[in-house]
Each structure stands twice: as structure tokens, then as C-alpha cells.
Length: 102
Image (cartoon, rainbow, N blue to C red; front, top):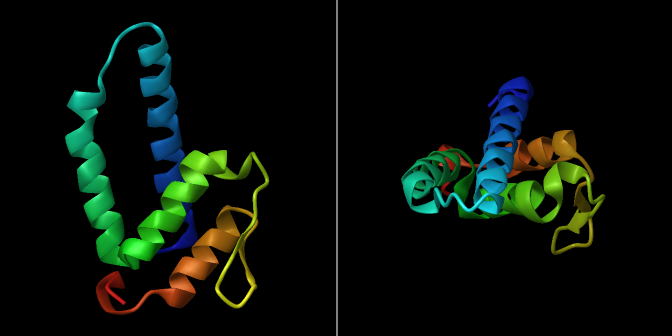
């Protein structure tokens, strides 16, 4: 996947999560409605980058708040995986195999 497409995808995920969170704070629960869409995104991302890739993307989007929390992640050898969105993309592209299955 090209970086610009990857960036657009993650930005759209972040934007939708903010909408869902805002509605939830207003006592409107759409989680059951959006879960099937989240499953579709998970399945497609896993097809491209594998389960580990999906886990890294989830960590970056949710735990690291799209890099706003400035967390870093390391691989098993202690090398920094990503400090920002571009670093995450580079890591995922470098480590994907046929159909992201590994």
C-alpha cells in the first residue's frame, strides 16, 4: 500500500472513532452498529499486513492516539519500530509477506 493511501486510511479510522466516542458520551451507543464495519477493516488490514501488522496499527491508532502520545515501539531486537505514522508504514511494508500472512 502506498504511504498516502495508508495515511488516508488511518486518518479515516481516527475520524470515525472520534465521532463514535462523541456520540457515546452523549449516551448514543452505536458500538453494535459499527462492529461489523470494524470487522471488515480488521479483515482487510490483516489480509495486507497480517495479524501482527493489524495489532501494530491498532496500537498506533488507539493506544498511541495516532502518535499524539509520543509512545515508541520496539521489535524483539530492540530496534525502534515506529515513532510516527511514516515509521509505522515503513515497518509494516518492510515486514509484510505474501498477502500479509507471514
